[in-house]
Length: 515
Image (tube, one colour):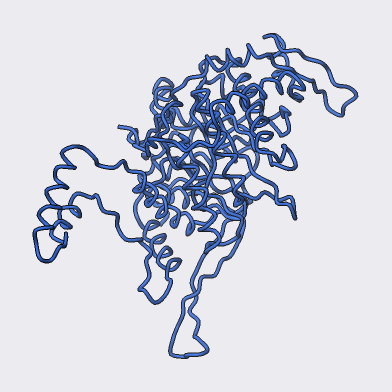
């Protein structure tokens, strides 16, 4: 059985049906005038041979073309794109089945941050009371490594609410190069979690190696097609409205291999997209539709996710402001547009603007986590451990996020209301009304046994002090001490024999022999 996710019975929507149609029509008009600038020759020729109007742009430092995509080409692509997408997993019970018309939400990690935030606790003596010792968290940012990525996958394997794994840290070891980065980040992830693994591709030359690795783990080419344990993120559009060369190549080749792919667009309202809500949504929708059109031309039937990472610019620095309410509005609107096309939606929530875990990070994260979840995206990424506008990852924050999603998941459980339940309630009320105490205490125990009552906050203090971070730190270390189901020794041996560039220290079986 695949993972259950959370079914949102009545999704929160900001736009009316008429407004959704207006945005769709505006996006179609954008694709025909002005269209997109393409820096990728193959994409340009593919679109032109299928009816797009193409004009060479000159003079230019790089060959590029103005591409105007007709509506019928977009509609044909939408008809070809699967409405249900499976993301497989090493343990098939961790597979995700995403139906574009069903608002069933899965929570996912992400994105590839450059900074890893270490945490430790130091004891300090209270000046006003030297007999009182206080434990204070200290945060130490540094560059991420491949072993950090292993740790992140290890912890995420044991986070109950996390449904799939997007590599949350950029591996920057001295022996990591452009030629071996992809095989190492995918293997480090796959070897430390049995959940689905998604990432971007650094070097297109490594795609076949990754597919070969996935086939070895899944059991063969046919088995990988039936159980796609890996998928890819492609940001082929640079906002506003430009097909970049390298990522477009990647998306075309991934589509040709039939593996699941996210067409992701990430405009910033106020700089690379209009500041008005309808403006940024019309543009991002046009950019995603262009990517879906190209992907379906490359290989009709390729499983694709409608990807959206819109954000508003800070007015003082022009940095991304994920904590702004507008960023949440944009994401909810994009979920509606994906549902309009009946495509599974890769949406964004849980990112904050502050650099460390604390009150601001919790407020900003919960605000977007709750509201975007209520809108019903199928694949909600960036939801664990991200800080400082997607530039920092912290395991402690990921553990805190898991606790918050436990609460959201409980809140979204459907009410148990039926005629039999009402009859039982009336019986209880009449019984209690006839007693002198007028209390319902005797009915608590059966409710506790049924699992219908929420548990206390796992990092609850003693009533006098706030120990949330310290308790979460204990939980983090507990999760790191739990075992992980690695890829079996025989398959690992074959992978290391056949995959060039894998770092020997990632072979847990060989490392154990040395100890």
